Length: 438
Image (tube, rainbow, N blue to C red; front, side, top):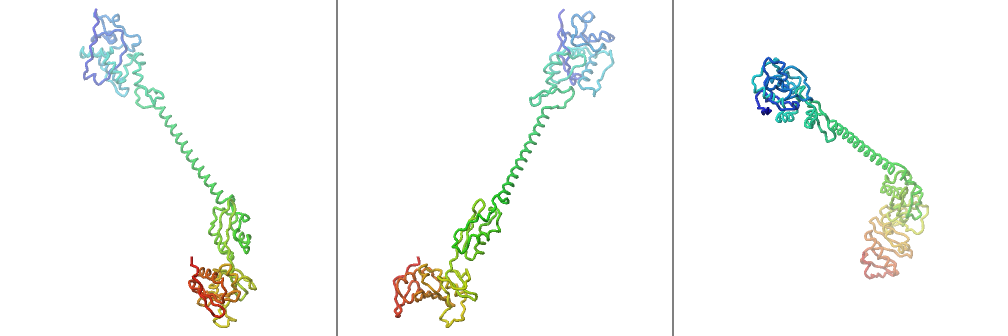
């Protein structure tokens, strides 16, 4: 007898909402007969494999698969089978509507549709794979469970590291690989922060140590025995200079203000006109001195005062030293036995004497000045020099050096561009053009 083919299941309002199950594979694709009422013993066999044409169970035509054991001997109607599928799909939270056992199906068409879905057609199988639903108990085969499609629906690949199986009915994502990655990232961030903190602390510590070594430690501390003095004329010794700078012994050379040290040396040592202090690494100083030159002397109440060209008192002695110009009171104001010399007069004479050339200065013995600042010099041969005021001192010094090449009793350079000389008999001579100021 020719085996009838199973019809395609048609969608209906009753079975459209319920997902299709995956029935076990059968040896034959038989169209089951509808279950008749009152045949409870044969209804279960009709649900499993259907009956033959003569009312006998179709064991020879359609036998159940040995891989799908029968779990119950109660008859399953199409309505009961749909309720069982809903219960397996929805879980224990939903109670299926189970009609009374032995109830007759509404129509043979519904029984045929149910039998076709149980037979496992291609459409129901694909629907079951698409929704990932489980078949009712007792109808799931080992082949369906071990299929790759079913495994892919219940497994999750996390970053390609490994697959983690998810339990059925649980939609939580278990990502062991992601947790490991986050833990590694946190550890890397902690190591990065620790490395940065260590680097910053190391840099700060090195900077502090270098600053202390260069500024506060005795590594570059000043040692007084390493202070060298250059430019002294003998009136100022090296020991005097070192005594002035002894208060800075042990201080780092980086902390010393050389400008202040230079001013301090020139202020405390009168004989020093100017001092220039420079660092001599690693622990010394070099002091360059510019000395004051004594050019005149004036008698005071406590002896003779030695003066330079700025009228600074360099020394006080009991007797007038030789080789210096003696500042005398002005003789035009009468006898000056008790006459004193003002500071203005002393400053005028010292300025003039300080501008003379060494050859001319060696022939000058004394000098005087009026209250208005008119200076007169006396030479060693008895001749006098009318200098005038203290303007154009350098030009007048060159003109006087030129005039002294000829013998005269009076040399007048008060007007340096028109100098004159007078001889002892009163004759006045006007020499040639005076040297230019340049």
